[in-house]
Amino acid sequence: MVKTFQTINLEITDRLATLTLNRPKAMNAMDAQMMSELADCFESLLSNREVQVLVIKGEGRAFSAGGDIKMMLQSGGEVADFTSLMNEIARLVLAFYQLPMITVAGIHGAAAGLGLSLALANDIVIAEESSKVAMNFIGIGLVPDGGGHFFMKERLGVPKAKQVIWQGKVMSGQEAYELGLIDQVVPEGNVDSAISQFVQKLLSSPISAMIETKQIYHGQKLQELKDTLKLEESAQLRMRQTEDHLEGIQAFVEKRKPEFKGR
Image 1 (tube, rainbow, N blue to C red):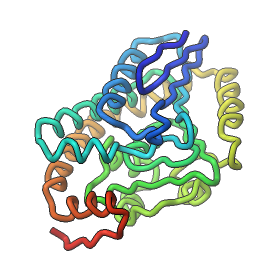
Image 2: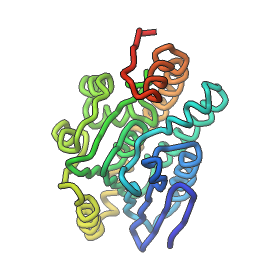
Image 3: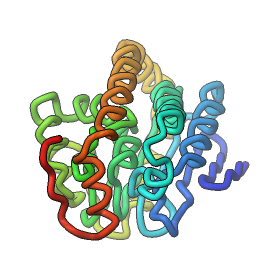
């Protein structure tokens, strides 16, 4: 079965679902429509007891370049628009975190910002050596959203997560693997075959027991994730009103190095 949205594709074959981010011309940057469709898709899968593995990947040259900068410019700081976007982000993240299936992300090209938050939310993250992995909100004077603080902490612990978020540097897939941010690194062009092998291994395992373990852990952490999403929303609203954010966006558009002043 193939369910087609406008910005994502969902294909279900027996116990395997494959979700493809499908805005290749924009490097799968997430606009309001993609956020809403992802949330709808994940919520529809919450009650699906047939699918046991969900794979997420990106069409074209990248997994996802993050939130759509053009969308940020168009919203112009309107609080109503911002709140609506953050609600959709929270909806998709919370539904995804509670999915009763094993989730696997396959990264090639860029996985940045909100795109990286989504990738790190997966149970298993497999990336090509040459991938560009970045929690780079700091570059435009913002904090991570999409549960980025939560998922970074889960994988790295608080001290290292803070440092990676503050630096906002672009890492290769190999560097992200060595840091412990992702679970497996493969040569360029091999992520699809690596995922296929991994999925076959999962589907020939006692996967129902694996899903139970996931739900025990995630059930204990769900309230913390909800709290983190609320804190990210309030922090992001404050940061969007700073001079540094406006300078970061302007510098991005003008393709120059930003001059931040801590205001």
